[in-house]
Length: 111
Length: 113
View (cartoon, each protein chain N blue to C red):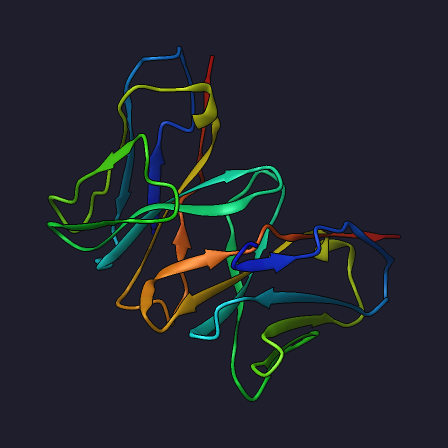
């Protein structure tokens, strides 16, 4: 079993839709959580960190559920420009220098 | 700002050849790392370094060597290329521990024939 798992998608949604992705992690010692965005044939870029209390950045909301060991990303009012692959990443308390990525969830927003 | 710079961007090798992927950052980051990205596999950590003179293995280190003689540079060496090493390679850096943003280079696309 992979340490960080994501549904590969693609999620195909119309503009204006709300879409949510989950990412599960298997190691309970995980301590830091992130969502990265990767456009086609480009490098990943940080979208947002995920805090225990949940956090919001404009149309994007990230949440952490430690009991069930997953993080989520909610995108409201989807834009065409949101089309990308969304990668979750996790680091562990016992090896904080190793950031482990999921394989990504592809989002396609159609007009 | 240059950020993280990787060279070359594209490379084709024959099986058994060796080569070095270069990575340099100008942000004075202590931490640097190399990932490979394959379809359906996501990003997998190859090697990382927490400072000059200090390196350690990631998830998939076999077939690769690294060194960190300066804060700025973190080259990745393929000792004897194999087709299984065909991939996109990303170098990344950040300050301190991974509680902040990891900055990636633009990637190096390697094909081994």
